[in-house]
Image: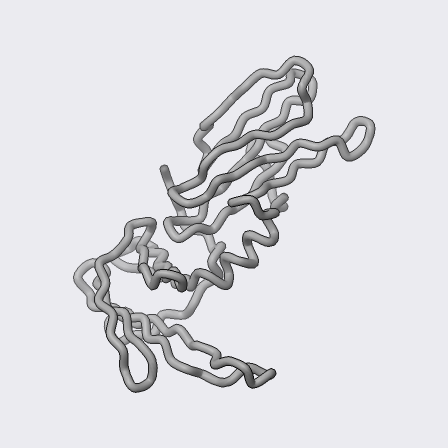
Length: 197
């Protein structure tokens, strides 16, 4: 469960799920006296159910275009409940670790708006605030370049070999994004932007 202030007293768990099409905030409401279970994604209630006697169990739902999620409600003591999130079958912490290996992210201000640019390493697809961009890739002597535009400005993600791993087994790749001629610093994949659905 993510720490932080919860929006209502009955919200018992909150997670921020980084996907290529955005970072989604998932909140889970569990009324242990009323039996109510509700799931909110980015503040919007997507499911609310009343259970009279079933205080433990699972809730299944989808987030974005790529994440199948399950909230598991388990008894952790005689009067306390634990809330655990699975994303695509993985415990939340393991999913986050995998996302950090599979996505590269940059956040930059353009025309008084923040844009979140994401590169999927498995497919080399590029997204800006959740929209897949048209790209043109090319190989260079140093590695590869992926070209695209953001609001009419030419951009590029350059991939180069930066070093060999400590074990000497594989090359480490460096991903650098350019907005025009300016280098954009890399951001954490779970860094938030204002986001609506």
